[in-house]
Structure formats: C-alpha cells, structure tokens
Length: 104
Image (cartoon, rainbow, N blue to C red):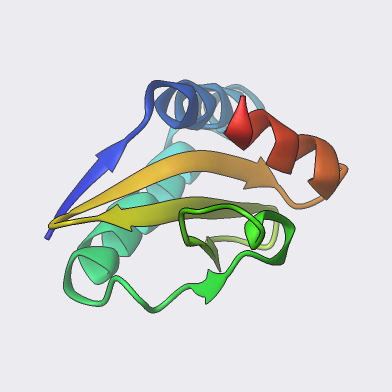
C-alpha cells in the first residue's frame, strides 16, 4: 500500500522536524525523521495496526492513530490501496481541538 501525507499533516511534520533541529540538533531531527520513515513502512504493510481513534469514531471514515513518539501520534485512514496520514498530533495538547482540525 502507498502512504501519503495530507498537506496539513506534511506541514505539521515539517514544523516539528524544524523545531527538533533548532532545539536539539541535526542528529535528533534525523532520528525523528527515521522514526517517521519506519512508521510509513510499517503502515504500508500493516494498515490496520493503529487503533480506531475514539475522538473521530463518529465519522463515516474510520480514522486510526498510532503513537509515534511520546510527544506525537499520527492519525490516518485507509482509502482503497492508499493510506492517508491526515494529522500529526502533539499528545500534550487538547485532543478535542486537534480532532476538530482534522475534520475542517
């Protein structure tokens, strides 16, 4: 299966990676991006590995989430043979507001 990132999720990924680079250095940024790459590979072979996201369970689309690091989780859905990552959530922030952002 093919994994794609929505524009919103890709922008958030770039923001997080830039922040990590600025605060912790190039090696930390690369470790973070390596985790993202490994997760993409895992999702492409095991798309149902994430749990159904409870904050989005009322939607017609089945959104799933996976905790990527202790500070971030991704939210995605499966569309045919494509996995679309729709959000990168900061696990320290208000989850309801982040869920609303996915839908708008």
